[in-house]
Image (cartoon, rainbow, N blue to C red):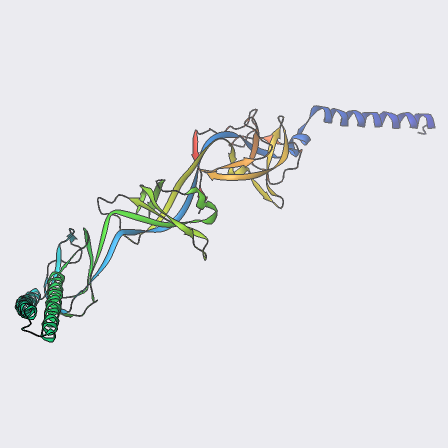
Length: 387
């Protein structure tokens, strides 16, 4: 069968018309091809919350008062009244260094003082007699001068003996070693019968109620710390507890080597559970801010130009937004950029998205949803800033 040229041309036109109709119908219907090209994503709504900015730091517990008691006089230990771990009150006797010997030395010094005092009286009488004779020209001026010199020497001997009595009394007092403040005996370094030299350490006394947390904050945060500020202290032996404390000391200087500020906070320790040397994690609440725009942490992507996220535009398109992050708290992060409380952001599936691209919103079960997943807002969050 042979077709004429006119018939061949009509057949070609009819075929092209059918092809265009089929393709056009497929595009207008928004069929499976278009649906499969839209990446599935999960979204969450931006929230506005109040946050409490905090500084976090690490340090250790230290005793508020701690002293090493040393021997003030030489001698043999004749008695010890406490053991390690004992509680002691202020002024309590801890140890005795041969007090009987010190009593005898005091008695001897007092006897010498009495003798010197009598000698002063006797010398004064002799000088007074010579002075009267000198007035009647019965005694020379040289004898009077000698009598006056003898009286001065007698007074000097008396003063020296008075000093010896004072030293003997001090030695007797030092023979009974007492604690300077109430606390606990942390260490005992001597035993009964041991001979002591001056300056030898005897006891370590600490007071544990209240106790202090000593820590350092970075130079950049030094202006935010002040006495009276409330602090929370966490300790490894008590993971489920937070101990309230108050800042009592802020160093007047910044450490030139570490560029940090030394701070102390006082906390109650009536039960005696807290001990010096424990590692402490400290949190300081420094300011409260309202109206902070926050998104889930998983919405952020770190790129060369900084942090970015994808904001929903309309119902099925996304816009790439560059943001500046602020504080982090409980899985949320403060963001500063082109966002407001009515926006939705992509939290899953954003790795391969394009700016202005079409997306398919899915629920947690993976099925398409008509409305985005909305995160439940919280009233207040506490943020952390490492110190």
